[in-house]
Length: 311
Image (cartoon, rainbow, N blue to C red; front, side):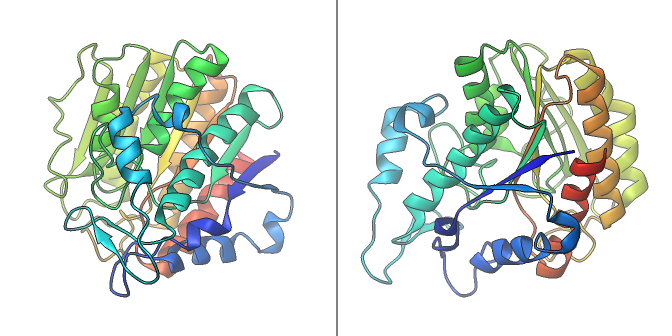
């Protein structure tokens, strides 16, 4: 299975400070893991910049302009909130991160590859349409989903999100759009506080599967097998986008779930099989979200990409 790997060196230039968990070393760890011989068959390419018009598929012009206007000089940084900081390289990194998802959608929709993984940062699933938050500047997966609809005429696009933190930004972007579907597992209670099972979207197009602190692989698999995978299958997307966060790993410092690499192999395989069985015809785009223990992040990302290649 030929899988496209999209990344860009600019994503390493987004630096929110020495003690910030969403650091450049996260991406270095992922890319180093994907240099192993077993990944030599990946088709590798550079992420382009997203255009202003593409960003505005989800975000109002005022939000896009405000983010892109933040260009601190030298080593200066600007805090947008308690968790989200921009430096001189942040705007360029954000454009490349969003652009990776767009380019991946183009590649799979044109039939150039069947699957793609975007190894980029900053992540995106916390960015609301009108506000950055939770380390995120633009809503990368949501932008990619809307691009698939606008540029390729797809009627139904879904995002499957297994980051340990709920993708409140994706949910907000999809809430009143019947052609977009979000299925999310996440620890609750935990930042950002959204993601209750009762949050269903205006068109029943949101499926949330909260997990208790301490949830292990069996609990994770149960919520996907019993609730989220059937909901995704019923929606029958023409393209499946994965918000691939690896911070539900047992070693991650920002939450209390107990997943292992084998669980990420399992969910990736299940999602690929779902895409193969339905209208997506196997088309999957995956985008890196969270994961803050570098060793666990590298191993989990490798397990995820391996499954994209083999499922």
